[in-house]
Image (cartoon, rainbow, N blue to C red; front, side, top):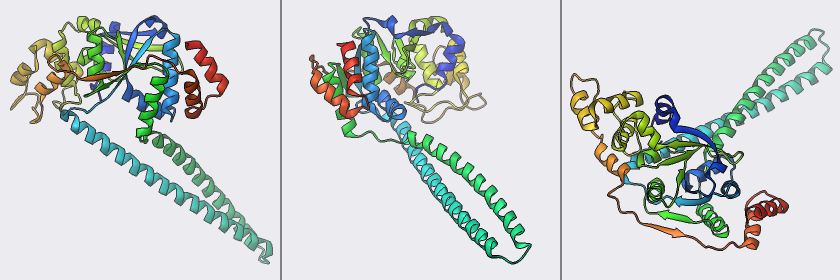
Length: 366
């Protein structure tokens, strides 16, 4: 989910902090990449994680950028409600797909049935001695034809909808993770395994100047303190969108601690939000009252504008976003050796690229 409404807030209040750039402008930079997010993105767009990751690494490498991938560990307990909602949404989606598949099957049976009726009617018309009957049969056939066309239109719409929904339902297997690790090892691409969430470790690497920027789609990287957030990566072009945290804080005229409070008020993964309090109001209230505590004191309660939820644990969310007192444990994996023969065979097995395509791309990056 990230931070609700943060993108639209920044586009309105801090447009200078959002810049479209070419990947080439990050030449000789090191970028931490949110692996789990791109696993889902590549499965949705390509149906093949290896194809997606190879083309991502290829684009970064030809632009002289060093990728560092970060895998998720166990999420904090505060995220359980969000994870439950996502699981329920997936179950509901699978039920919707099943319902559409059942309806499609019924439509196909009706079409077959009506086609049979039409054939019988034509046979009757051929042997009939009744002068008026062929006219009735003709009208009946015309009606059946209209109904058949309507059903065919409904079938096409249902098939299109099914195709869209099926793309959203996929399962990441242990083999998928194993293959991703193998690809990174064969390409000599370093990767980390976080014990907690990947975004926390990515931002930690950024704060320690181990990486220059973080690549993901989740806006809460900024909340964690990422100095440069890169979004909208696409394997089909070399443009990317950069969000600059320093410029954001300057434009909003707030501290990073206040920015964290704004993000919590907007709505985040770690706690519920105050109902009817949106991003613009959150910014206005923080600038007026400094922090969430004062907002609760002045604006929430009986005869006040906002009602404070019982389970609004903003203090725990703050700690998780700040991360300064959190001890991080993580493991770096780096083979430091490219195995071209094994890499060629692996790519041929796990992608749809032809051998000459594989060889050409590998020659460009090694």
